[in-house]
Amino acid sequence: MTIPMRNQGPRPEPAQSPRRVDARALFSGGAATAVVAGLIALVGILVCRWLFKVPILAPSQDGAWGDASTVGYVFAAVACALVATGLIYLLMISTPRPLMFFGWIIGLATVVAVVFPFSTTAPLSQKVATGLVNLVLGIAIGSLVSGVAMRVGRRRVLTSAYQPPPPPAYPPSRPSSDQYPPARNEQYPPTRSDQYPPTRGDQYR
Image (cartoon, rainbow, N blue to C red; front, side, top):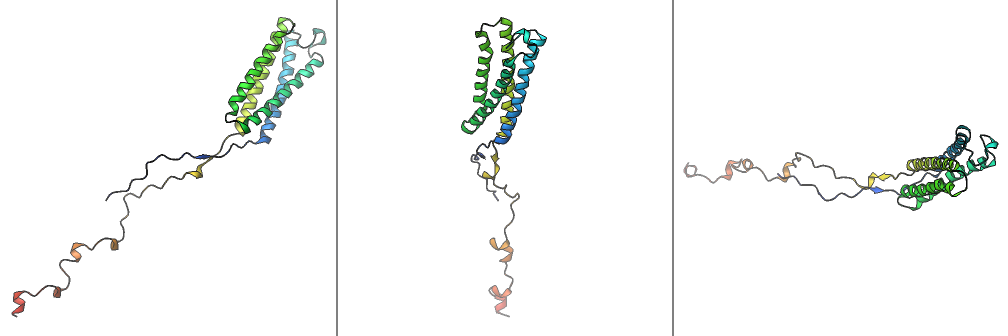
């Protein structure tokens, strides 16, 4: 008895639900990134002015913390982190590859922030120190926001869209006896003797 083969055609791909972005978790991570960015800016200024004696953003007589420019730089770093969070949110709800586009945007913005101090008339040491702090800020903001976005913006696969057929029973179950013709021993010889024609000996008894 032959066993029917299953259909070997291509299986349909599992359906994917639209990308759902948890905005609350995303912006909570963006707020935490903003705090980290502000601290990086503050620590960078402190290290440059106090440890390496490079007076960035303010004259050296203003001490290790500088003047109001230090506060403005810290708040600028916080604002950049929040803007990056809003940017990744817009990309996640409107573009097919949000992290790729976000990486390019943050990378180019970081290059601009590193190169910009060299266009000023400040001493070379201050230009290099400011460029390094901006580089660390760009890397930190880009990596932290991207990590949060990867966590909150994953697609969910709907496995119920495709159900594979069940495997065939092996060996196949035997159907009921009424579906088969009667066996030979059930017809020949007949069970009743009167179904046979009388023999010659029987006629002359």
